[in-house]
Length: 352
Ligand SMILES: Nc1ncnc2c1ncn2[C@@H]1O[C@H](COP(=O)(O)OP(=O)(O)OP(=O)(O)O)[C@@H](O)[C@H]1O
Ligand SMILES: [Mg+2]
Image (cartoon, rainbow, N blue to C red; front, side, top):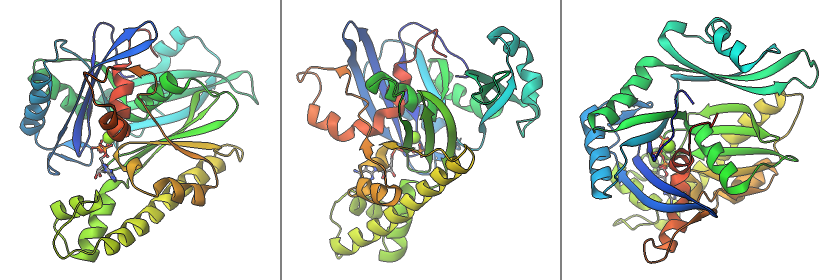
């Protein structure tokens, strides 16, 4: 996390297709759901992860918070994309404090941006298995301008952005809180959004590989538009199973399946890259999250392509709510969309 804090907090995930908001209360048996909300964004609001229309994003965040009567002003949010660099590096063994004081200097050789222009963070993973005099560290750098654009949105809404996380680590947090740590298997988590997919591979519960794939749900829309000659709006309707005059559902399914196949191949490429850079270790299980994870047959395609079990991440599995307050069918259906927001809502001081 680039910065963090305690107190009551609302998790707000600004995605390129919609803004997701979750508030939880910690209870003895886990978490209690307090608020859940989502509001769409037009495609021009956020492009390549950059906020192009601040006023519009501010309006949507503000109305989401107001319509759900959110009391806390404290926000946990996250970023991802080209302006965020995550690197696994090796350094001589040192303490957390020593690392704090040398991070600026150490980071310089690994980060392709001016160090004065980035926010830095790190996580010590532990001694290296092959050379115990060295330790593995995850280094995170995010361009200040980029982070500040996100901070500005919340400030303009009268909110305090107290936690600034990275999408793939928020997903990891949601996974751990709901599934615990798997020490035996190498598990991959993939957040499948509209514009991109964030891959995070965990070994013994620690992130050992991350990668963004610049392909996501938008690819389906582009293919449907191109091959069936539809508008962007109609493409989204038919993609989600809706009907549009003169469009044959069978031809839509064909385009969807083709797009799913190439998406699965992209995932395969990332897994191959992980294996190539980590002494041939292999991902043994995959959890998928994000809106695109709900695509019919996606799981089958991924299992067929990758040859490992694939599960839909359920970020609500340890979260309690009453049927009176929330519709459980709706939550089950929309759950994967909230994985990042859920991981954010679970952030507390002392997390690292
Ligand atoms: N049932 C569904 N079947 C297929 N695709 C879906 C479904 N529901 C949502 N999607 C797609 O998921 C995407 C939205 O997912 P999500 O909210 O995770 O993305 P985002 O956070 O807005 O995008 P990004 O993180 O890439 O900026 C859209 O492309 C949407 O069309
Ligand atoms: Mg997203």
